[in-house]
Length: 142
Image 1 (cartoon, rainbow, N blue to C red):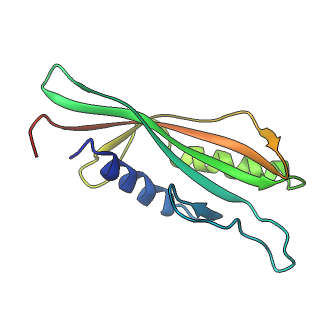
Image 2 (cartoon, rainbow, N blue to C red):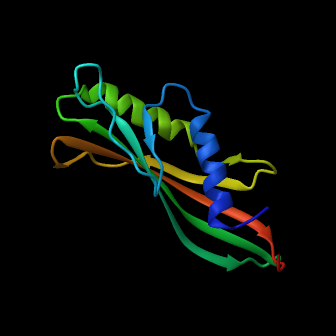
C-alpha cells in the first residue's frame, strides 16, 4: 500500500480505463490534441487532474492520504446534452462511493459527483466529475 501520488494515480487511471465506452483521455501532463471526427468536427474527451489534498496519521499509526481525482468531460457546443450527462453519470457511477480499488484495495472512493456544466470556454462545455478518494499505508520509511 502507498499514499504516494504516483501510485494512487495509477490505481485511479486503471479503474477509469476499465470502463467501456469512454472517449479519448487527456492524461495529466501529456501533450494532447482534441479528437475530431472524419469531417473535422470536434468530439468529446476527458481531461484528467489529480489534486492530493492532505496526508495525516490515523490513531492506529496508519498514513492516510486524501484528495480529489477530477475528470472533466469536455464536449463541443451543440453536442447532445443528454448524451453528455449520461456519460458523466456513468463515469460517476463507475467511481461509486464505498468502493475499494487497486491491488490490495489501496484506494477507497469516498464520494463522486457531477458538477454544474461550464460553457465559459467556447466552443467547449465542461462537465466536471469529482471523485474524492482516500488511500492508506503503513507508517514506515520506504
